[in-house]
Length: 414
Image 1: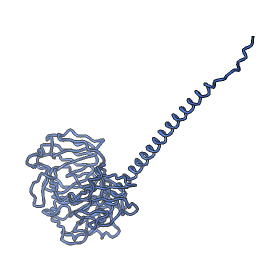
Image 2: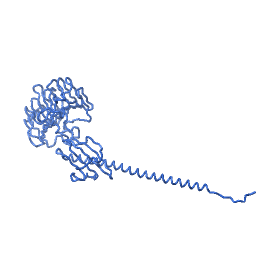
Image 3: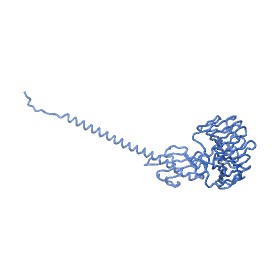
Image 4: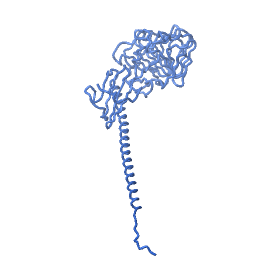
């Protein structure tokens, strides 16, 4: 029998599906909002990071600008200067980098401290750099190939500063600063005494059996003086003969008793019929303002002839300023004399490829020697005085020797 009651449909499934759908949409909406928020935050963080990095590049531009200005100042550098929005500053902004400010403080004759800050879209970034000029002649003796001490030369006293190789000031007083150091790109050998200098430094590829030996980072590889300027960049800077150099003043191969400050050029044609440039029995550097008071003598052959510079039987610039006499020899030989004929030289002798004649300990040297080989045979006479005024002979360019990032609040203008 059929039930006459009409069928009633309850649409519970549809209502449940609707609730689930709405819930899913709400979850997706919340997730989408979270993703958008995270993306926006991430984009902001990324942009801030980009601005922070760009600000570092701007701060570096401030260091470069300071280096340029210090180069322009030359030897008479300012005690301090700045660039930025301050009446005390040289200019208000670094060219091409308006968001940069920096201050430069002179720490010594040959060093500055630079603090620079760049700002990009409100993001600051700061750095500190120490810039210095290197000494052209930091060593009492430097050799490219070998440095040998044979016999009882004696040892340097670290307490008193007295030794066969020692530092003296302008009045010829022994001083402890700077310490007298010898160095080589090759082997430094001590036979008889263990440490003639305060330190025996060697560069990579060299070595020493002396005490107080030290391996030095970097390079110091002097090249023969150049017959023309400018010379290729090198450490140390290569002396170059300017086109305005005066003719060789030697007569019959012997220099006059005195020379006015200036630059002089000698070749094999000036020494004919011989090949030796000799100093007279007494030679002095005359006073004068030309060439900063320096006498520079370039001895460069034009045909490959081996030329010799001799100080035998001569007192060269004795009692004078060692930084004021500079002799540059390309190739050739150095003759210091021997025994009773050994000479006395006060100045800079730069002959990085020269062979050594009469390798004895008899000569007296004051200033700085750059040679291919230096050998002291015999005994306790060896006397090399590193003149403290060598510190006045510095590179013309400045370079960064220490660099670090610092908090931006450490950069302040006067």
